[in-house]
Structures are given as C-alpha cells and as structure tokens.
Length: 277
Image 1 (cartoon, rainbow, N blue to C red):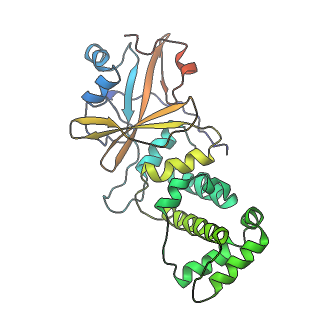
Image 2: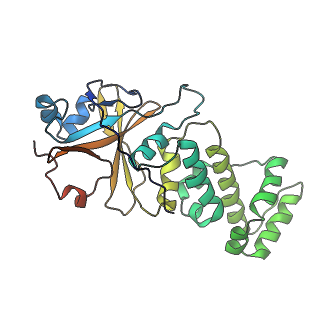
Image 3: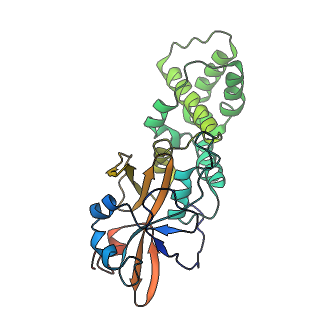
C-alpha cells in the first residue's frame, strides 16, 4: 500500500540539551548521553552542540498523549508518521493505513502471527457474534479467501447459542477473524498503541518496508528494544522512555545547506561520511 507524503519546507529547529522525554512539539534535542556514546555521537556534540557544521543524530518533539491512562494520541504512531513524512495525523493513519487495508484483504492479517496471539479472545458476546456475521463474514475478500462453504458453515455455528467447532480449518478461520475483530476494536480505542502491536501490521501492509529500531531509555541506561524486523535495507530510529516515543533523525550540513535524513540506508549515506566529525 502506498502512503501519502507531506512536503515540508520548515526551518530546522535549534537543538537543546534536555535528556528526558518528552520534548515539546517543534523542539529538537540531543540524545541521552548513553545513546550518544552507543551511536558514536558524544565527541561531535562536545565540540558542536548545535550541529552548526557537523552531522549528527537528534530527537524531535511530537504530539504526545496528555494522560498516562487514556491515549487519545499514539506516541509511537506520531513518531512513525514524522519519520515517513505522512500527510495526516495519527487518527487518519490508523483509519486509512491500518484498518482500511486490514479489512480490505485478510491476507495482511494472516501474515501477522504475533498479533493473532496478542489479540486472541476466548469468549464472544452475542454482540461480537452478530458483528462478525454481519460485518466480517459478508466481506467478499473473506468469502473468496476461505471459500463460501466454510463461511456458510462458520455463520451457522455463530448463529447458534452454543459455540461448537469440530473442524480444524473452521477453527482456524474462526480464531483468525475473531482476532482481527479484536485488533480492529483495539485500533479504534483509546488504549496505548505500543510498537509491538503496530509494527507487525506495518511490516505486512506497507509497500515501502522500513525496519524500525527503538532505543529504550530506563533511568540512565539505554538498550535496543527487541522489535519485529523485515528484509529491508531501510531503517528508521526512535527513542522510548515509559509511555513516550520520539523520532530520531540525522541532521546533515552539506554545502551550506542543512537538512534531516529520516529514513536511513547505505545508499543515502553514500554521498557523505556518516561520522566524519
């Protein structure tokens, strides 16, 4: 699926030295000390703290949720859409780039085994059954993928009071569709959209596949978080602390121009030395 990109001509923000997350929208800051050392950035910022002439990694402020319990904003998705220059907010991204493709082709969800596990649901309410029968089993794509006979059989099972599934094939279709419905409900909710719940779907749906590397800060320590990786030579970087995520970009000074590299690959860095100064 192709994603809409925004064109930005904004002036680059001044870099401050705040170590903790989050920083305000429109602000930029140096990375925490331990991460600077991990990325060989400590000497660069010692001599050129505002990257006036050097190249270096910095983090950017994005829209964060105002509560630790209700997440009207997704910090992870807002960081991701900043890195891919998405033309829209996190709500639009969830609706157009996640929910819409997942509902249009169930194969996208079939390729997300980790999400099947996270979003298993043991007991269905009558309302759940009704929604699955009306909204999901009527979808042309689902009927074509699993065959009319299987879908008719599953519909008959769901219309009965007692749920009884004897066939492995019907059992698989049932658990997949129930999990998909639970995942869509989650995406539409105000629950926290952590990276482990979103990255598998992005990896499956996106045409332009990008590995997301997350550095997790815990007090003074920084470690690389385990995330689901794909076969791509493109990478983007984020930092996470508690509920907060922020995008990491590479600021470049080249021929009196300043710009930011958000998606990292060998081909992008071939035009200049990465850690030259």
